[in-house]
Length: 230
Ligand SMILES: [Zn+2]
Image 1 (tube, rainbow, N blue to C red):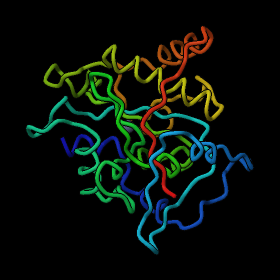
Image 2 (cartoon, helix red, strand yellow):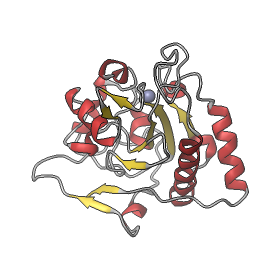
Image 3 (cartoon, rainbow, N blue to C red):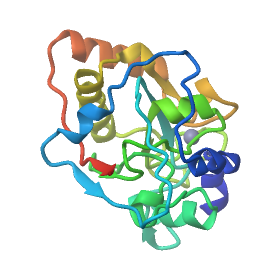
Image 4 (cartoon, rainbow, N blue to C red):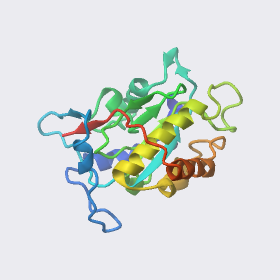
């Protein structure tokens, strides 16, 4: 699924990760909400080798959702953070990261609803050709192919599973409460850049409605596994 997965990711964006100092935010804001993350209990901090740029960011004010364009397995292997990291490392989308952290996305949601950590949360992902979106968003990918154009039943899941939507809701509610943005700032890849991702079987308006309803009802978020670069 390497080639179809590549359709969901942008090769050019690696240049953004090479930048040593994070560029000025395009909207001119001086908000810094990412520092909050380092004080959270359970955050796993990694240290890059000396001289390797971490390209840390200071603002997260949105979430961007993808699909993997794959089934639950590819080439006999489970599609998960580790395998996606390997795919993106092969495509040089990994920046200075290896293993699961090489994934272009911050979180990977498996069909059973398990949330895995990918790219460290305090650095940009590389999931789209929209660099501003990359540097400000939490990139989340759901394993599956939710496109009726490419998936004629050969890939499972062919639409987001109930468990994935529950997990995505928990993750989003946690992000809203922690980083202070809301359902209107949750978009699909196709809404921020030229792409079909995450497929026409992923109803993004329904997702935003679900998130708004959950937030309004006081539903609590679920903290994901957090990886940070020091
Ligand atoms: Zn995508």
